[in-house]
Length: 114
Image 1 (cartoon, rainbow, N blue to C red):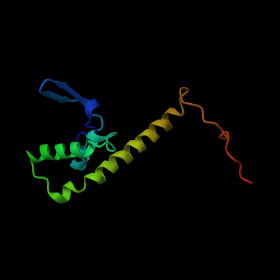
Image 2: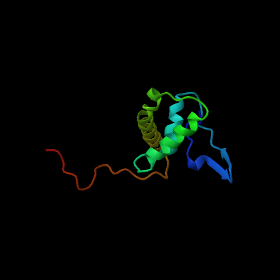
Image 3: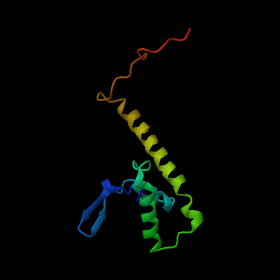
Image 4: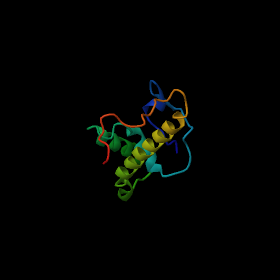
């Protein structure tokens, strides 16, 4: 699995499409690769059409049972959770850097507990 198959990782030249950025690839659920292309678009109205197009293309090569297709929302949520976790991990790493934004010791404008 590629695990990050989205537009930013595709090189398109006419009818030729090449996939780049294999640093996240590995073993896992193949339906996860179906969820990654709609990352950051899952709330948009066209998300359903994008998922349907992926399903149609996949089924040209291999069968995709209905019970598997119905799991798509689960994998979209999994993708979102992993993106959030990855962001938190990156933030933690960069917080040690001098380029990280300073964290205030006490948020301004917040009420103090009594």
